[in-house]
Amino acid sequence: MKAVGLAWYSLYTRTWLGYLFYRQQLRRARNRYPKGHSRTQPRLFNGVKVLPIPVLSDNYSYLIIDTQARLAVAVDPSDPQAVQASIEKEGVTLVAILCTHKHWDHSGGNRDLSRRHQDCRVYGSPQDGIPYLTHPLCHQDVVSVGRLQIRALATPGHTQGHLVYLLDGEPYKGPSCLFSGDLLFLSGCGRTFEGTAETMLSSLDTVLGLGDDTLLWPGHEYAEENLGFAGVVEPENLARERKMQWVQRQRMERRSTCPSTLGEERSYNPFLRTHCLVLQEALGPGPGPTGDDGYSRAQLLEKLRQLKDLHKSK
Image (cartoon, rainbow, N blue to C red; front, side):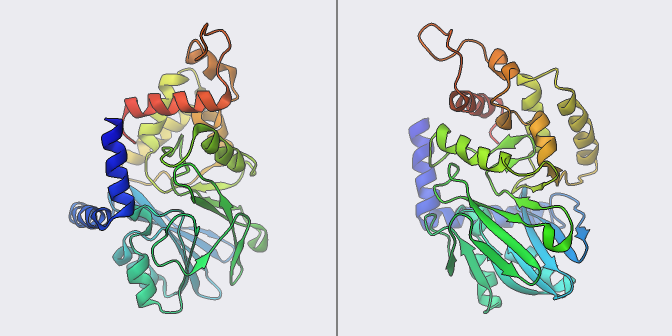
C-alpha cells in the first residue's frame, strides 16, 4: 500500500495527471459548494484585512489587503475563479501571490491569476517546483506590499520546499498572522511526504518560536477531525474539550474555524506537544528493544502521525 501511495504521489506532483485530477476536484467542489464549503468572516486590523476564501472541498485561500493602498496579496489561490471574485468584490489590485508549496490544491490558480494580473509576482520556494514562479524566496526573505511586511519561513517536511508566511503585525499595530499552508492546522499538522520526522519536527519548532497571540490561518478546514484525534491521545485535556465544543457549534452552521492562535494550539495540538510527558505515557512503551527508553520527540511525532493516518485520512 505504501508503494502505491508513493507512486500516486509521484504522478500527482510530477506529471500533468496531477493537474487533471486537481481540475476534476475543482469542478466537483464548485458544483457541490457553489458558495464555498464554509461561511467565512474577514478580520480587519487597523487598515489591514485578512479575507479567508473557501475553495475546493476543504481548502482555504486568503487575500491579505492593505485597505488604504487598495493592494492585495493572495495566499495559495487554488481556485482562480473564487479568488478573482473576491478581488473584484473588494475593489483591490492583486500584486503578489504567495505559494506555500507546489501541490495543485494550493498552486493550481497561479497560471490564470498571473495571466489576468500581468504585474502580479508569484513567490515561493525554488526547491518546490511552484508553477509560474517568478520570484524565488529563501528562509527569512521579506515581501513588502504597501504596509504589509510578510516574512517567508522555510518549513520543509510536507514538501521539500514548503514555506509558511508570517505577516508582521507591528506596522499596523495588530496581531501577527501565520499562513501555514499544509505545515500546521488547527490541532493538526500535515503529512511528511518529502522529509523525515526530524525534518518536520524542526519545522514545527520554527513555528513554536512565534508568539502566543499569533493568529493561525491554515490551508484546510480539518478542525473537527483533528480535535477528535487529539481527544484519543489526550482525553483529559480540558483545552481540547472546550475547543471541540466551540468547533462543533461552528461546523453545525458551516462556519469556518479559522483563525486560532498559536497559544491555543500549544494547549491542545498533539503535534506541538511532543515535549509533554502525558503524550509519552499515552503512547505506551518506546520503540527501543525493551520499550523502557521512551520516545524521542521526533519518534513521538512519527508515532502520532501514524496513529492519525489510521484514525482518518486527513
